[in-house]
Image 1 (spheres, rainbow, N blue to C red):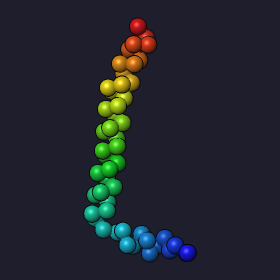
Image 2 (image 1 turned 60 degrees about the horizontal axis):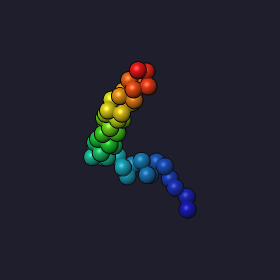
Image 3 (image 1 turned 45 degrees about the horizontal axis):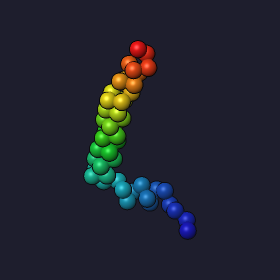
Image 4 (image 1 turned 135 degrees about the vertical axis):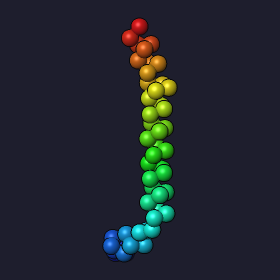
Length: 49
């Protein structure tokens, strides 16, 4: 079962794939930032007081 990377990359070389990956990455960054702001900051304030 030999996988040709160039063939695989050519198969997914459509703007829709780049849009989907960018959307999921941005969504993950927003979720990470919100988690830090909503849980990390209050925790730090609680620990430091």
